[in-house]
Structures are given as structure tokens and as C-alpha cells.
Length: 226
Image (cartoon, rainbow, N blue to C red; front, side):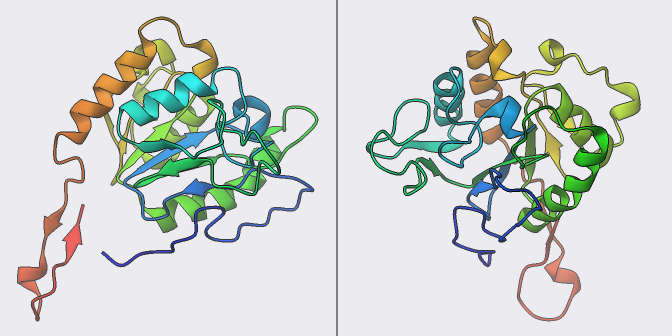
């Protein structure tokens, strides 16, 4: 497969109209795309990396590492994903491997954005999601889960947004698999293990669900579809 880009931070150069934002981060050739809400909910301000810098970040990042979605933290980076010395944005703190992290609304704000603000940021999120075209979407928290189910599946009308029930469950989307994740701030005993086990089982299967239709066209190159 041809690489989309090797850039780790903001690989597609997204520039929303706000003074400060937390851009997408990770492997732009990802199989897994972890989708959060916004910096005010899921952190990332200090390191400019989603899901870092919060009290629950060590447990969340550790679960992703145990599940094989990230390879761990760089040397000199605290368990919450923020570099301990110097400029916290000068290093790539989280070592990702076929995983990308981003937010529905990447801008930092003093208070919760309104629905119009989320709608305005949708163009950035959707463009990045479709450019990466990961096989598995992992929306984190109720808002991200509701948005992903409504936009990228036909299941929203029959799926109650109960994050305790949906946590770690595999849902079929329109070209994607969706595995909702309970908001890490609300995790209780067993939630981390439940996610790790679910992702471990998923990764042991043919989660890409691709078919090679190259035999129907001229030439010897594969033509993979899902």
C-alpha cells in the first residue's frame, strides 16, 4: 500500500480559524482511528496531542498500548503523554503504529462550543477521516460515538447511546467497523481490560474485510475493496 504521508503531527496541514488547536496525530496510514470530542473534554493542549495531559490519560494510553494500537511513550515523556523537560510540543510523545488520534472539534475554547461550531469543524474532521480511511473507528465518549454512528453507519436510529453497554462492542458501519469507547474519565474497574480484550480479539481476525477484485481487471496489480 502506498503511504499517504509520513508526517506524524497534523499530517494534512489542517488550519482551522482559531488561535489554538490540537490537530490530528499519528500514523496517517492507519488501520485504527481513535476519535475524541475536543481539547476541553479530552485534553492534549500542552503536548498538542489528543488524549494527553489528563488525569485519566495514563490509563487510556496504557490500554491502547496493551491492545497493540500504540507502541508506547517516547523517552522523557510522563505517563500522561506530556514531555517532562523543555517544550512539550518539540517531541512526538506517543509512538503510534497504524493508529491515528483526532478530535471532532480540534479548536481550544473557553467554554463548550455550540452546535454551529461543531458543524463548522466537521469539514476538517471528515476530510482527515476520509483521507486516512482507517478500517476501524474508535469514537471516545458519547458525543463522538453519536456523531460516528449517525455519519458513518446506518445504525444510529436503532442504537441507544449507552456508553456502558457500547464500550468495546463491534458495530458494522458503511465501510468501517466501529468500536465505541466509554469516556476514560468515567472508566471504572474492568473498563480498561474490557477494551483491551475486545481490541485484541478484533486484531486476531481479518478486521480489514477486504476483497481483491484485481482478477476482474487487466494487469496483475491487486484491487482491494471493502
